[in-house]
Image 1: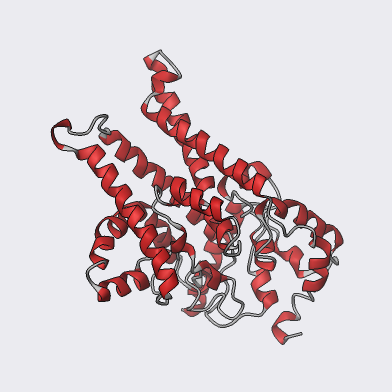
Image 2: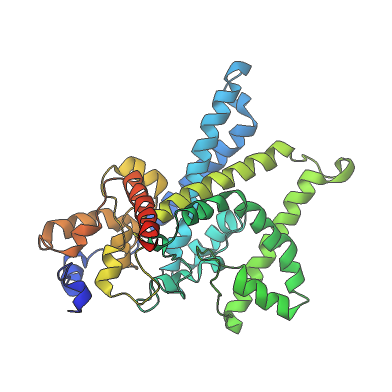
Length: 362
């Protein structure tokens, strides 16, 4: 056992796999049912924000209906969007139809097609986790607390950035190879670290990227024409309130996702390679409060530590697998150190640790 792991104790990956070995097959019925129901209800609630009179004829109830439907649609759209995480851990050639439908109903309209998350694989490579080559990691506990606030401030610009990325930069990359490479390296990944440089794609991957970029561009053009078509050339022109609602929905979704991300790890890495057990205890599970934690960390993401142990385990199996591990692993297993009571507790601890680290530097 490496010296740095002795303070945590032993963790047998083979023992853990024996305990949960039956939970590695994704169930397509669960995936399809969950996603399509969530998307359908989310779309219905989104439309009711614009047309509250469908629910209540009394104008006094229109704003309460709008507010309730806004949050219902935002939470459901958030759940739909996070299926991108599951798709990254399903092997190529599997769930092909689901992957296509997800991109058409969610990835393209939300401007988060699957290619922007291909780099997530690096976050699970043991030699890259927590290093500069891991775009989804920042050493927050050794940085000023202001870095946490800076990260959270991105919620206001993420949506406009996506529109610029796919609406303006995408067609420009068709005529400029240097710009295409720059956009791919700097503006094509769902990451935390702004200094991360994405490796250039293979020709096969580039074809997939260009196709998804093209559909995102067409979607932006379509919405733009529907909103700003001069002289009513297009029937059913979208009101400006639609743009405001879309922006606020995007802000809310990114807010939830950023808070979830901050609570997914302890962020103790200083940029060096970590052992497997160090990576394990740096990750967090939230087994308590399944209803509320399932809202801000849906699709199994409240069991993030377990996910880092077994990245290919489907989301619907994680709760049962976690209970099995807690029941059967030794009492001194470092896996038990990953459990947290609540997201506010973890976020407050992160803030305090970052603040204390700056005092120690002085």
